[in-house]
Amino acid sequence: MGKITAAVTAVGGYVPESILSNKDLEKMVDTSDEWITTRTGVKERRILKDPEKALSDIGVEIVKEICDKRGISPTELDLIIVGTITGDYRFPATANIICDKAGATKAWGFDLNAACSGFLFSLTVGTQFIESGKYEKVLVIGADVMSSILDYTDRATCIIFGDGGGGVLLEPNTENLGIIDTIMKNDGSGREFLFQPVGGSRTPVTPENVAAGEHFIYQEGRAVFKYAVSNMADVSVAIMERNNLTGDTVDWLVPHQANLRIISATANRMGLSEEKVMINIEKYGNTTSGTIPLCLWEWENQLKKGDNIILSAFGGGFTWGAIYLKWAYNPR
Ligand code: UT7
Picture (spheres, rainbow, N blue to C red):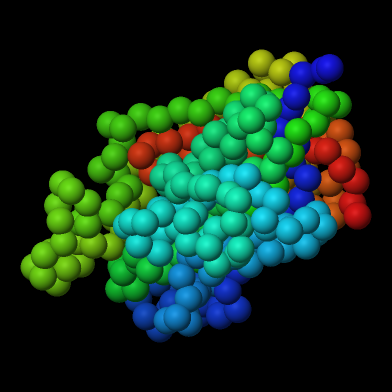
């Protein structure tokens, strides 16, 4: 028998209904639609407003859509991995809650924290369980509720992020389709440029640090931009070279949607024309682990069996990476 690869066999996605536009933000902080659009590419983002809802509810919608599309029951799933930094609780893991609420009674699961690279790291881990022959149905989610950790008086962060996410089902394939190669990286010396200062064991929550707003996300945008723009392009080019791909033979780039300028720089370095790059940052902003699966979800009907796809991300940590994915099915 040929080598077993992990193929994506279905995609799901979910964004909350409520829209927060740049015009809305103009009324909340000292910013402008013009500044946000030209500096980031974001026009609006989705916000999970319902106080009864959390990350697991987004995850359940994703599981349901994937199982419906694939014609399977959640009881057939072996494992659910959730890439996220905004789980329902610090513990237990949101994957447990999703298994329970979605009726994935056979599956076990865990959350994986790699900030904006969360989906790529999770996909890399999920792939191992398929390639080894251990499991046949691994569901990988990337999703975040960034509004739950944002300070809507801080214009440096609140204009960028949004809520939502997506996921994919991985199944064994013997036609050499699916995840072909992965490069994952991290550099913890970048931890203080983009992080949530309070709430962990280093600085537990106190009334004083909450009053000072230190439980919200903190980012030094310019520093992160500098690392992101070079590392995301470098790792994308590296995975192309390692697999003898060129700008002509890559069909799609699925970039993390942090900033349109980072996406353009990456696509240029890869020698890709604009129409090969999935971009929806204008509608959803940066949903952290959610951006890449949300793109796959929106473009699913344009993807063809055999398409060469590069997924690429950079995020807090720092974490970054790229995956070479060969698409396994035609539009249904
Ligand atoms: O997804 C995880 C990884 N994260 C990223 O990849 C994000 C990377 N960083 C970025 O995307 C960009 O750095 C930002 C979009 C966050 C900021 O854009 P920038 O072009 O780097 O702006 P800046 O921070 O250098 O600020 C430029 C100017 C400053 O004013 P002065 O000092 O030149 O007078 C800021 O105070 O723009 C000002 N500014 C704003 N003005 C209006 C900063 N934020 C805003 C704002 N509205 N929201």
